[in-house]
Length: 439
Image (cartoon, rainbow, N blue to C red; front, side):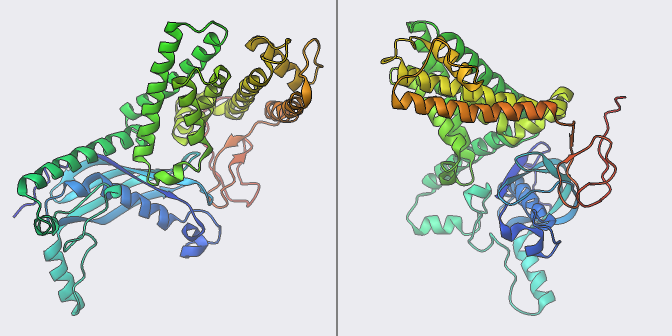
């Protein structure tokens, strides 16, 4: 009897991610000697993404098994980075589902290819394996009453209805619960597609987020020099609600929500939300909102997309990131100077005065007619000079050092090479660096 796979259509996507730890490196799994993400582990994450895409749509009592992989692994990922794999259904032929797959870390694409899975009846498959083994049944994960976790995005029906009935749940309640779970799963998949996927609508969505953050920065800079009025405060609330919706969506699709609060970028978002929704708390905190742009530019999907779409960004990525870092530092320190000095120092009466002091202190051209008073003021001046000069020198070094290109050596993982390099200068491996054809 044919298996009904009408619910599985081309375009369905799934994703899975993994924080690379020591046990995921090549020496630990026996696939190499360099302590970077092992290819077998990357393939495991890719298969998990394919499961997330389709397993929850299979008929009761059925699962899919991997039967073919044609995957490249062309960039190294060190311990500590997060790898995210995506799988998109491209064809359904009989019981065979074909996927286009891709794996990325926080810096770049590390692998891609195709993958095929075949749908099997769990009971029949178990019987066949038992006959071949001549021993105990070989029960697949998810069969005989077990199910995939919601985090993986798929469940089996086997045993679930019996469990619900035993708990005294009415059939109508089970139907409502199933509908709610299906709706929740659909929303979860859609959000993961938008934030992590590679389809055109996901790319447009992330560019829209970048445009929104840049508009937010422009709004902050312009309104910080204007008196607070009803329209400005209303726009503050609108911006804050959009940012909190983005924050909640990211938290909802996270594999480990508690771990998200260990990341500095999460606290940057919380500061930005508070500064918009609680503008009366501290006007100077508004400048901290600019850190959202730094967070967004640091996300690997945006960086990878900018490298792909804009040759100018590929050629000048390090300079652009250095400029953004320096700009964020200037605006944050301007906020700190204004907040600590405007009430006690008559020389700091507005944001322009605070910005003027920050720039003069950063460039060590002298303080001129504005100085910070008191012990706290002197400490702030020292911080601006030390960290500001460090960032300024980093920008200068990026501007004047010899031009390099980004390309991961397939053997040792070295990322930067001379544009005309033929061999990796670290290990001597032949590197085939893509050339745009410019003279």
